[in-house]
Image (cartoon, rainbow, N blue to C red; front, side):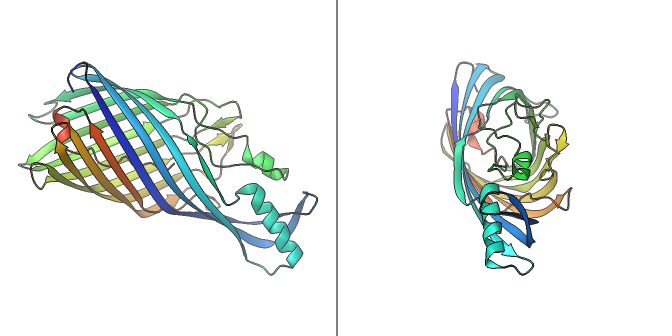
Length: 317
């Protein structure tokens, strides 16, 4: 991108059927006191939409500043499923406890922004290849929550879903693309984010990283097909030094998509991320099993790179 020019990108991601849940024997009586009830499950499902506006400004021909501003909408559905037999009063206590943990509702708001500096280099290893390296930080503008485990033990309403970490988290990203034959190229991208300290509620977010290898095939001068995989790693989060049992996962997804150059500086892309396998580090985790995610994007104002899509940016808000 030439110095002094802008690039504006709009992304939308739609994820469905992120399913989770856990067993419990905790209920609430009519006075709000915690009581023991028969074993049952909280079945929880989450669908989400993420909208993201991205603005990039080229401070030099090989360097640009980028600001990403996301907005998330999360639809949660939750229900009680009996494991052991229960009386109507016990079921009422289960439902009351479910309501303070994860009631069915829509959660939405601005999530943490990201500010990056990106350097570009062509012919990095061979003629015609491309290397992008970005460093930056998140900006803690998303809503955060108090310790949900502490509040839950006291029978108080709480929220596990957060829209940010409440901390400035360093971010590193890199991508490399190399042609294999006319109209065929291989690309790989990497992104990582780390929380280095606790926020005002005592929360320290997990280390997260995504590796995405991809094959690009030009179907025409304007149309590019890409396919690959996304490997996502999430480490442990903690509340006041105590590990969050619902964090820690390694997930593999398949990726297929298309990029269409509709003009000299405008590209439209669509990508589908399909879950293949997931391993959670804690068998008692209440984390979600991922569902399919559809990404769409429009990028305008780019230079020569705008002829093809960068592919999906897997994330699980």
